[in-house]
Image (cartoon, rainbow, N blue to C red):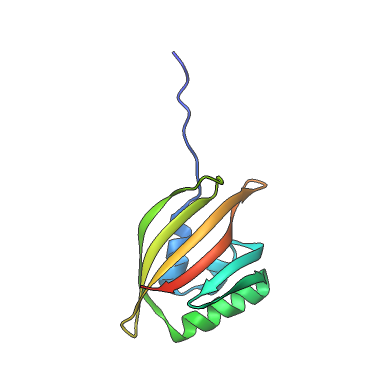
Length: 117
């Protein structure tokens, strides 16, 4: 008998909890040193601190009411991804997508995006 190998990937639930709560500090603890960030029509590559401030600004005007994971998996580059819907207190819904990579045993967000639904 061959031993069974268990697939271990990132725990998306902690990131989902942070988004759901609008907890930017918890969310940014998962950011890589540089993050490819897309917030609606603005995008760019930012350092962790600047990306944190931009997400904080966005979520302060679009306060999350709920976040629901819709799909997760891996892409051809070996990155893990998650797609979810974030409803806000002002009645809007946004699509949130993020990609994680394992670096030195820790999963970090390399890309994070929020787009209009």
